[in-house]
Amino acid sequence: MKLRKVDQEFRNPKVFYPDPKNVDLDRVLINLFLLLKCDGTRPVTRGRPKAEFEKVETHRKNVAELQGVEGFDGEAAWVADQWLKSDIFDLVNRGRPTEAIASLRPLHLEAAKIRVAKHCRDYNHADALYAMLEHDESQALVDLKHYLGRGHHAVGGYDGVTPLDLETLTVLKLVEGIPPLHPSQQDKAAPHRPTCRGQGRVLCNDLQRLLAYQDVVPRPVMIDYLKTLLGLHLGLYTLRVGRQLSGWISQREAHPACRECPVWGTSDAPFVECPYGMSFTVDMGSDFRSRMAQIAQKDAAAEYNRLVDLVKAIFAMNQLLSYAKDEKLADDPFEVPSLLKHPPKDFESDFKSTLKELLRYQADDEELTPEVKAILDAGMPAFDTLVELISHVRQKHHLSYLVQMIDKLFQKNGPFGAIVQGRSSNHPRRWHLGGRLLEVLVQLAVLHHEQTGGEKRFYTEPMLVEDFLRWVEHRYGFVIAPATTPTGRRPVTLDEHRAFRDNVRALKDRLREIGFYDDLSDAYNAQTVRPRYTLSRQGVA
Image 1: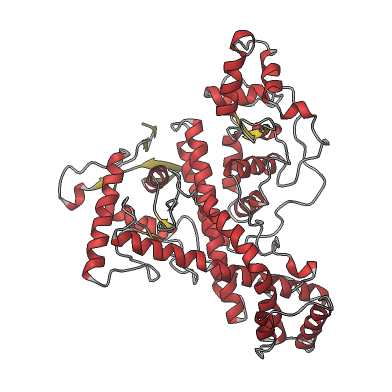
Image 2: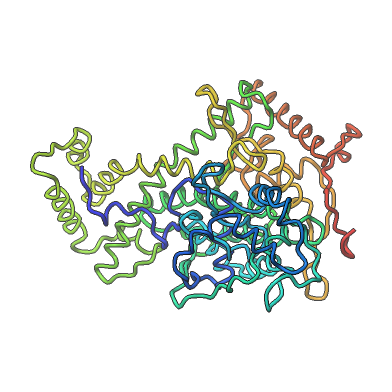
């Protein structure tokens, strides 16, 4: 069945910023850096760059000509080229004749100066992150921008004072002489508040906590931490918005708790009052055939199946927003679901007209499929019928990309990932925390703060394993031990009790492997998780 272009549109900044695609988190960060540099607007375009701008060799030669730079020309040129390709530049079609630069690696705010737009697309994921950072606790955005810009002189180039690693210093040398980025006169890229404000608040708090380590964690490691956090929260945001919008449509009004969001990142249990709680049973072992792995697989499959609800809810919201705009009503995502509860006088007849227009839009010789006929004959109201038709035609397309998007945001099968899946069809996805992601979560969990002279000062302290399990569950929904939240899974059989017990043991083994836990005693109060990077109450230890 053919649809009008207006009915096929999925992305709507008022509801959902990202365009579901197979994204690269490095490129998302580069585009976020652009927004940070230009105060939330797109930069002024300079036209299409010359072909040689896309070649690593061109930039290597430019660096070699700078004063005080050695080892980038002559006999070492080939080695320098290979190092730049492997550690400094993000390339497309690597190793092929069409190899080209997408951007620099996101090691510094200035890295966005070398970016080839056609190769460095983020499909508006950076817009979503910027909205989450700007619209609630914007201090996190200020702190992030300050950290990412460290070492760069206001006039341009390295300031010669700030200690920087070799890779970041090379990035600053590569962008020397390139004109600065200037904000355009266009509207902001992310003018609307995110649909779920609470997830943005928790992200802001996590970023501020992470930046407490900026003087002790090496910059490339910190960038990996930042990328992991941003991807994790955007993935959680996507899943939560699916629940949220579906709830609004089914209840025919926005939930009162969403209007005055009770979620704050500073809380020990931020989502305790959220009506759209999430939980993911996580397998910490390595055997995909274990009982715990089967539970984690079932949870992951249920979560991916819920993406259908997200697609349908966004199509419904788009129709309501379009109707409200045409009728000169308040086109606010928090208000339009009420149109279903208290429809205007011509609401039903207007959508009946839309359905008739869709049917006339079909070719004369086109037969409606049995599925479409069944939807039309189901006796539903015109609005519900229209949403079902659009979802039936378009959901397969959007679901395939949404699955790829979630896989990328959760960094499937990576050390920073929250999901794993084997190559065989016998290995379905399951929730599983990678070693580096576990490292990030521990570093955040052991942080505490105190107010000193109006300034928030962070310090680290070991914490009990049980407290860490509770913290991870309440903050991110990752259930490793028997759940303590209403939405989390609790063991109901002896087999499941044994599975959860083994799962906690596997977590301790993983923590021991990455250096955060020593099992020196069976005593309850001796089983603690300790930080790798230590901050004392007086400063860096």
